[in-house]
Image (tube, rainbow, N blue to C red; front, side, top):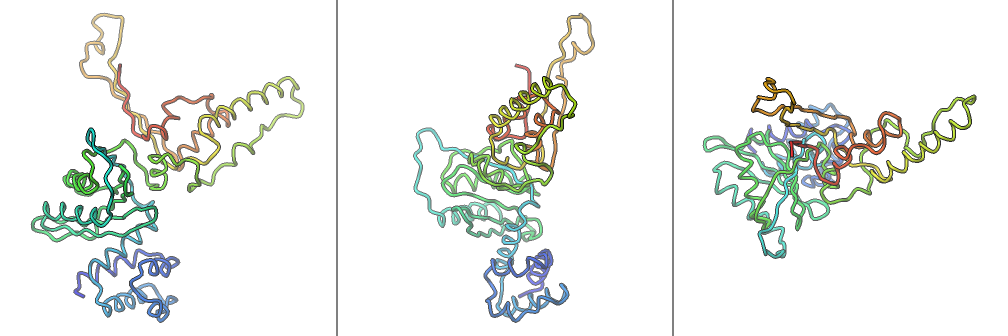
Length: 339
């Protein structure tokens, strides 16, 4: 093992929290159970890292083994990446082909390696017929940069792929071409959908809302909330409040469902409109360029926050479709223009 690979192992292992070290190393499945039992996991982290790197060196670990360890770490900490969604489509009249994962991997790798002299591609199979792909980009004169990789998660026989942010934007078209050709599709487009929560993005595009997501510990379930009414309040007002509360809860449930929402951190709206005026010679009316406005809603759990607005009395029910359509449209970037 040369110094470059040893440093790669060292920096990868240093990222792993001590509380997760054994779990991630077992999931990596490179070091045997007996080897791990002989390691002192109670020592200082720097000493532990040195022992683990020596073990990897004795087993003649390669840069590809280090890349697989990095994939396992990223799978455990996927929320530290920002994920984009790409949607692929077949050409007119094209049938759905039988899918072979090994053929997909081979084709994907060949396309990248033919276009770039220095690129390293690693694969790791995951649950639900998914494959995690790690791409370390290089250039014609530089070796692959192992510390700024791109991750791709592709679910076989689906038109969707999820990618982490690419440090080299010039490589995005090549990545799209590799995904399209290897998966036997005709076209690929980037969706207006982005989040740190990969499972939530998957639930949105696959329409799998009725499942449990990571939740933001801030509120009591809507059904358990009650209006704190003054005991001396007129009974007719109490009756009207109860009727309104029931209406709001019914509308909210019809709009959002009675399950936890996919987790997104923001929704962004770009408005472009021409200024309209009844007065001739108005400076803004003569402006050729449209007026532009950017509005961004952000929250640790945006959809749950929107769901709680009306029951909390902050907004009227139902909310604007521009806010409630996010999961159905599969978008959290919107452009609003004049018709």
